[in-house]
Image (cartoon, rainbow, N blue to C red; front, top):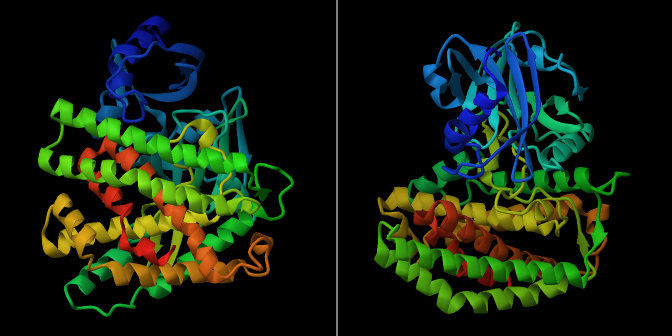
Length: 476
C-alpha cells in the first residue's frame, strides 16, 4: 500500500469501524492496535485488536467505490478497498498468505469466478461464491475472532459425523490456529425454517386450513434435533463434546442468570422510558408493569423446576436453535441448520458452556411463539402490542402451538431412545420429561426480553408475554 499504516489506522478508527455492521460498539470509536499486516496482489490482510478482542479485516484493492458495497468499501487517499470476501480473487489469494492454513473437510472448490454478499446485515461477512462450473458456495468469514470459535467446532464435528441437516462443509480457513472462515455448500430453499409453519398458520387463522397440517414437519424437526444431539455428544474423545453430570453449581449459575436477565430488563425499560425512546409509552409502561409485578414469581417457580436437574446430564447443544436459523427445502420437506454461533447476548464463557439437551427444545417452543405472534399480526392486521394483548388474553394459536410442540418433543424423545442420551431418563415418565422443558422456556423468554430491550425495544412485549404463555401450564 502506498499510504502508511498510521493513516489507515486513523481512517479505520474514526470513520470505518464505528459505522460497520459487524463492529460490536455501534457508532463508537475504539482505539485499535494492528497486530499483523500482509499484502499480496491487491489483497491486504489486517489483524487488529480492540479492547482485548481480536478482529480480522481482509481488504481487496478496487478501482473505486462499489455502489452495491458502499458500506463495505473504504478509500485512503487515491486507493479504495472492498472487504475482500466479496471479491472473487479472495479465496485463491488468502490461501497463499503466510500464517494461513486451509483445513479441507471434504474437498476444495474449483476456480471462483464471482462473489457477492448473501446479506450485509450479518455481524460476519457472508458471501455467495460461484466457481467456473457453476457450483455455488457460501463463505462465512468471521470479523471477530473469538478464542474458541463455537460454530467452527460444532460444524466440523457434525460434518465429520455425517449429520445430514447442515450444509456440506468444504473447508476451514485458519489464521494462526484461529478459524477465520468456513466454506460451505450454498443451499437452495424457499425461506427460513418458519416458512411452511407461518404460511399454514395464517391460513388456519383465516379458517382456510386444517389444524394438523404441520405436525409432521414438527415431528421431523424433533428427529433432526435428536440426531444433532447424538452427533455432538456420542463417540468423541475431545471433552468439548459429550455428556457430563449436572451439579448444584450449574443449577445455581442458571438461576443467577435468570435473575440477572430480569434485573437488566427492568433497568433497560426504565432507561427507554426516561429517554423517550418508545414510540408507544403507554404500551411500554404496561409491559414493564407486567414483568415488574409478576416476573419474579415466574423466575422463582422456574428455579424450583431447575433443581430437578441435579444428577442429570448436560452436553453440547445448539443453544440458539430457532426456525430462522434454518432453511426449508420444500422438495424434500426438510430443514438445513445454517447457524451455530450460539446466543449473541452471552459472554464468551457462557457461550461455550454445556447445558441440558432439552434446552434446545425450549428455544424451539419459543420460536413457534414468535412465529405465531407474527401470524396474528398479519391475519388480524394489528400492531405488535395489539397482537401481544390478543395472545396474552385469548390466544387463537394456542392449540396449534401445543400440537406442534408435542409432535416435536415426542419425536425427539423417540429419536434418542436406546442411546446414551437417554441414560438418565429411563425411569422418568414422559410427563416428567416434559416438565423439565418448562424452566428453560422461562429462561429463554427472559433472554429474549433482555435482547429485545437492548436492540429492538418495540418487540419486547413478545418475550414478556412468553413468561405468561398459557401453553406453559401443560408443561408443569
